[in-house]
Image 1 (cartoon, rainbow, N blue to C red):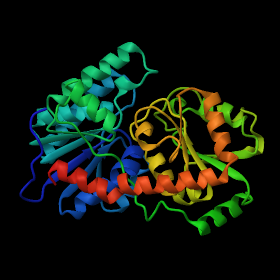
Image 2 (tube, rainbow, N blue to C red):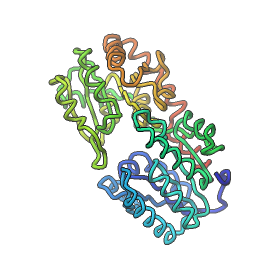
Image 3 (cartoon, one colour):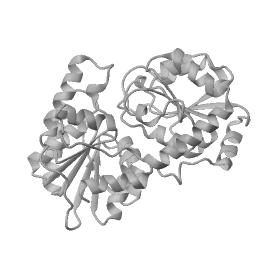
Image 4 (tube, one colour):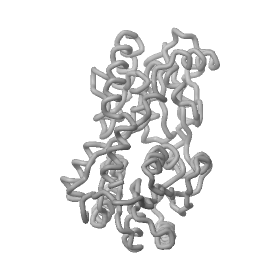
Length: 379
C-alpha cells in the first residue's frame, strides 16, 4: 500500500470498476451519484449487461470490460489488456476497483497505465470462504496481497475484513466503510404491506419469511429449504435470480422440489424490494460466505427481525437476541428453530425489528456511509 488518502484540490475524473452489471447497478450506483454530486466526473466500467440501462438512463457513461467470473487465465489476460488500453485512453485521476478478480485486474492495470491514485473496496475476501478449496483460497490471498502493494486507499465493507487486511499485511492502513441504504426508501410501510399482500393473496395474519439474494448455493438455500419444513405455519418469499455468470446447482429447482407447495413464492428479480420487505414479517439470509450484505441492511431499516448465519458480515450486523437471531452456517436445524421461534412470537418480532431499525439508522445510513467513503477517497 503506497500512500494514505489526501483530498484532491479540484474536480477529478474517477472510474468505478466492478465485475458485472448487477454489482454496478445495485452496489455502486449510489456511490456514483454521490461522486457526481460533489462535482467530479465519474465513469462506470464492468461487463456489459441489461441492468446498465438504468445506470445510463441517469446520464452515467459505462464502459464495457470483458470480465468473466471464473478462473480463466486467457479471459483474464484479455480483460487486463482491455483495461490498460481503456485507462490509458481515459486518463482518470482515480481508479476505484471492486470485487476480487475485477479488483485485482483493475488495480494492476491502473498501475501499468500510470493512474495517479488507485483505490479498492473489498466486498468479501475469497480466502475467507471456508467452502473454497485450499488452492483457491491461497491464490485469493496472493492476489489480494499483491494488489495491495499498488493500492493507495484500501477500504472494506466489513470491520472484520479491515482487521484481516491489517493483520495479514495486505493493507496496513485498511479502513472499514460499511454499506448503506436510504432509510427513506427502506422503512416500515403499512400501505405497501396491504397492497403487496393483496396482490399476492396473502392474509394479514399469515407470517411471511423473506429471502433476497442471488440464487446460488452459498446463500444457504439448501438449509433454508429444509428449515422451512420445520415451520409449516409460515410461507417463504424468495426474491432474486441466478445470474448468467453464476455456477453450481440450480437453487430455484432445489426450492421447488422441497415440498413446500403453496408456502413457497418464487418472485424472481424485483424492482420493488422495499415494498416486498414491508409486506414480510421476518428476513433470513443463511449464507456460508458474505461481505456485508445490503439485503440485511434493507431488512433492518424496514423493521424486520433478521435470522442470519454468524459468518463475517452478518455477524457484525445482527446482534443476537437483540435485532435478530444468529445461527451456525450450514445448520438447518438451528435455522429452523430460530425461524420457528420468531414465527410463533409476534411480540419478539416487533421488539427485534424496532431494535434492528435503530441499529441500522446509526450504522448503515447511506448518506453517512457514502460521505465517509468519499472523504477517504479524497473526493
